[in-house]
Amino acid sequence: MHEAHRHVDVLIVTALKEEYYLLPKLFSGEFRRQGFHCKRVDDPQNKRVTHITVDRNGERFLTLAMTHLAGMGNVWAYDETNNLLGSITPRFVLMIGLAGGASDYLNRGDVGYSIGIGY
Image (cartoon, helix red, strand yellow):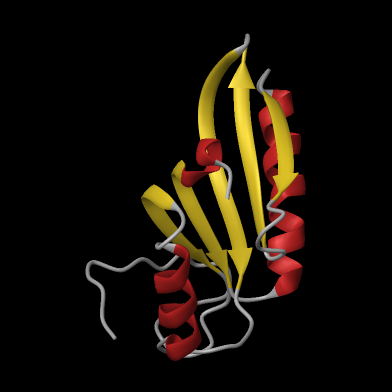
């Protein structure tokens, strides 16, 4: 992996390929509207990782690395994220996707978050 891509602000992990392919389009569209420039680079050593840099007026604003899981469930999420953390050092990790095992008190469109990490 290129050293410039080793340290990122945010690692985003998606459960589904569809989410993975949609997010860069959403990010770049919204950032462009705010006057930012996005550059997307696919990682040559890991076909499922994309790096996005967000600049404004020639200065780095945000660096992202994105991937999608090869399978569903907590075990896949843990194993693959843990493996990525060996080659990518993020300030924050976000898991974005559908919450198939969510409780009945969540409704479609709700945003859920964790106050801890469990496995």
